[in-house]
Image (cartoon, rainbow, N blue to C red; front, side, top):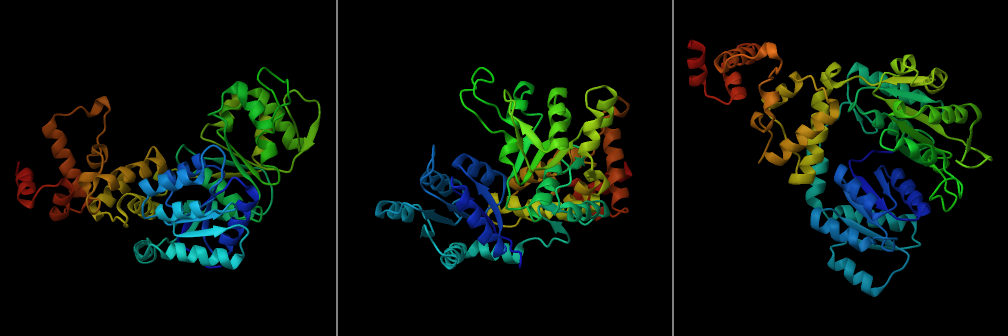
Length: 442
């Protein structure tokens, strides 16, 4: 299978149709995003570069035409393909007026879908030129993980070893290092990729709700429990559940998680009946679980159950050789989104990015580049970067120098970084050579 650049978003409230479409599109080498509602689709569009939208029309709450209207207003060059089981002349006319490239009626054959996808993508030749000729060349990528450093290569090697079994995996790393991308790669690069993948942020769900959200509940278990309801574990049966920020789980939830790991069974809140479960558990945290164990805030027996395989994701400051690859990825993503083209970065600006220690890791880098793409007219220059990066300012009390002394130290730092190349230093400082000579003489 030849991997393509195109990302395709499919939207349908019918899980079977989603899986059918995903299976065919994966066969043809496309990267697929799935959504079961318009709200979920809009969030995916905001966070990712999508090259084709495939959507149903008849969906609960918000229908497909509202999604098409949103896309036409915010992503006018994004091709749109309708797949519907309720065709009508009025819908066809409305679709044409909304700029829909193709209209496919269920049931359809695999060949009909392939032809519709090809025609839809071909409807935007400008984007085809960009994606094929100007897209950045990635030295190393695995799923959504980008990097060529030894530390990221080691992570990818572990992923390849665990992706086809259901060993319990623990991902450790600072905030913003891409722990969820590692979990996604484990699931979607392996043989269980067609099974559910459920993400649970244990830090975002109130403690009193986390237990019922994870394991479900029966009618009457508590006030407001009007019906039986499955939890995240039942929803992910056969696939993977990713428990992010596991360190925030209460001791009561930890106790029930331990039981799930030991017995492969879950029990809904308010029930005495257990249900068999076949789920791969991946957990992650940016907390020090051993420190939490010492403070009696995390169960030691659960820790050892969760860490059958441990993956440590290095902070960006320890793999700075990956920065140019990550910069290419984000400039392509946001360049297409905001400028309809691949935005480039000047060598001076890239050099500044590589000098920074990135306490916010990849998330910080992505946010800065997104801002820079919005602010630049053509390509990203030093002037489009935040001041704290340009001047590498230390705000500690020991660094409270006069403005003149700070300027002197910064000019010297830039000259040292450029091997005393005054032309290059002048570009970074955004002054001419005459001014830099004057500053040096002073």
